[in-house]
Image (cartoon, rainbow, N blue to C red; front, top):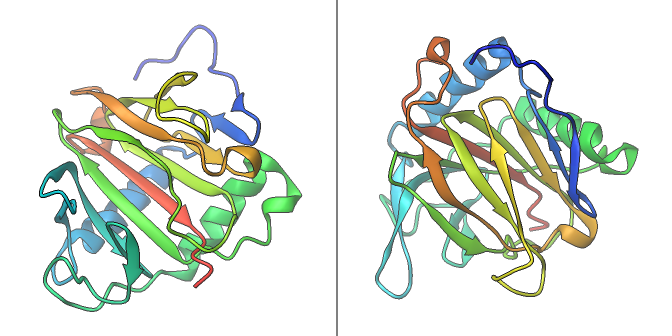
Length: 215
C-alpha cells in the first residue's frame, strides 16, 4: 500500500481496547505468514468449524496449544481429524507479550499466552459478533492481521448490538483488548478483497489471535 499523507495514529477504541496500526513490519509479516502456512498443513491443519446448530463458519481455522471448538478446548482436534493439536511455540508467546505490553503497558507483560487461533478469511468470509469467553483467564487478547484489509467491529460486553465501533484493520495491524473490554462482543462483517500488500504474497486475510487459557 502506498505511503499515506498522514500516518494512522494509535487509538483507544474502548477502555482497554487499543489499535496499533503497522505494528508488524514487512519482514515480521512475512515470517508470521510462513509460520501460518506450516501450521495450516495437516494433520491438525486448517479446518471448517461447524457450530452446534449445524451451520459452518465461513472463516477456516487452525489452532495451536489448545484446540478450540464450539464452545470449549481440547488437546486433540475433536471436531476434525482427531490429531493432537500443534504445539504453541515459545516465540509466539514472546510476540504476544510484547504486543500486549506495547498496547496496554507493563501490566500485560506477565501474560502467559498458550493458545493461538488462526483464522483464514477468503473474500466472502465473515465472523459474527461473539465474545472470547471460553478461557479461564482474563489476560488481554492479542489480535494480529495479515493480508487483506477488513472491517473489525468492536462492541461492548453486554450486547451483540450497538454501541460498537468499526475499525479498519490492515496487514501488520495489532489490536489488543483486555480489562473492561476483555469480554466485549466483536466480529468481522467485511473483508476488502485484493487489498493485501503485493509483496506479502497472500490472497485473503489471516487473523492470528493469542489468548491465555488458564487451563
